[in-house]
Image 1 (cartoon, rainbow, N blue to C red):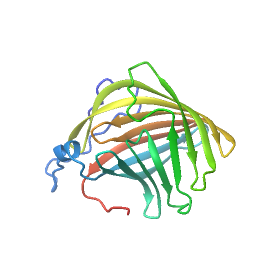
Image 2 (cartoon, one colour; image 1 turned 90 degrees about the vertical axis):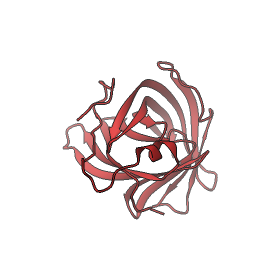
Image 3 (cartoon, rainbow, N blue to C red; image 1 turned 45 degrees about the vertical axis):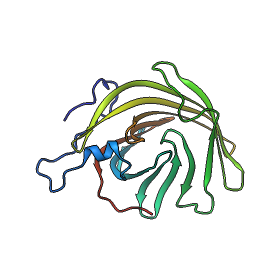
Length: 218
């Protein structure tokens, strides 16, 4: 197993999920140089103080266009979240399969092309509204670039950036607060790993494989 270069503080060191002699060789150039759809399979470990951890598997399906990326976070064929935006860091549309009549929209006080320098967090507001215009969340967020590195997944190497994002605000009039470490791959235009902390709960997402051969959720 190789570790992400310089990501010594990240407790979820990326695993290489490749097998020599596999029947299907992954086209790494197509992944980084074209908009070909792909899917990442991840292990999700949830820990809570005083309780046993739980582990599950999740699939992320990514469809890239020139100015938009559509991302499906899939727990089962009937249970998924679909987002659209310039990248996974700034989704604009959100659709929950469990609430098909209530798609959501995000607006931000900054644009998705904002320049981030290491150690200089950017603060911005983020609002989410229902289809009927009702405000579902109003938050103040910060996004900070922590470091750069590479990860190897299924035999392909990707340049990645690690961010810290914090959120403070109201969701349906209830206070919300969390922090998240996000490992983002610019060429893939998606987040490939994360650590979410909400109070005494920690959710760690670690990618295990990336594939071009998968069943589209829609």
